[in-house]
Amino acid sequence: MRTELTPSQTVGPFLHIGLPWPDGPDVVPAGTPGAIMISGRITDGAGEPVPDALVETWQADRNGRFPHPDDPRGPVYGFRGFGRCPTDENGVYRIRTVKPGPLPARDGGTEAPHINLSIFGRGLLDRLVTRLYFPDEAANDTDPVLAGLPDPARRDTLIAVAAPDGYVFDIVLRGESETVFFDV
Image (cartoon, rainbow, N blue to C red):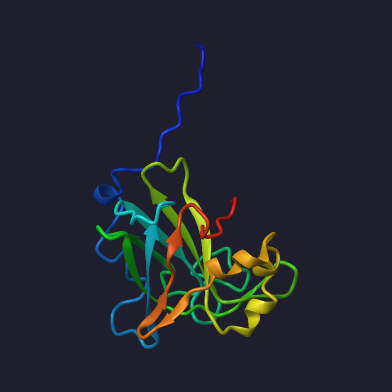
């Protein structure tokens, strides 16, 4: 038997059919104390909206603990930590969640509060991974990921903007204002 490499397949365009579920954009239910909305628009390199993308989020709770058995402090129960939202025809996504707490860093320091995001879409060979940080967080100045960016001028592409009901985090897939993506 001979095994040959097959061509890579891109993710999508079936994201809107198989991946979303009714509670997907709600990391926390409506009415949760301290709930915020994270919203944004995904655009391509020409500044056009991407109407067929999917945003996944993974985050700690407001105390900086994950709902996962591998959290070294023990898992937190009653908090999902995961969200999934397709973009609409204007490339917009909206996720209801809570602001996470700071996290312990591998070096013994502290990571600033952040949300991990994965972006899936037609034409992408793999997901894109980025982080959303919150403005006016003192811990942003010492966060090891933000401090380790090769081009500090691009740091602003990872920091959300405050909005009346939460935060706005636009994602630019290519071009001069491209969001920082991580090779994971």
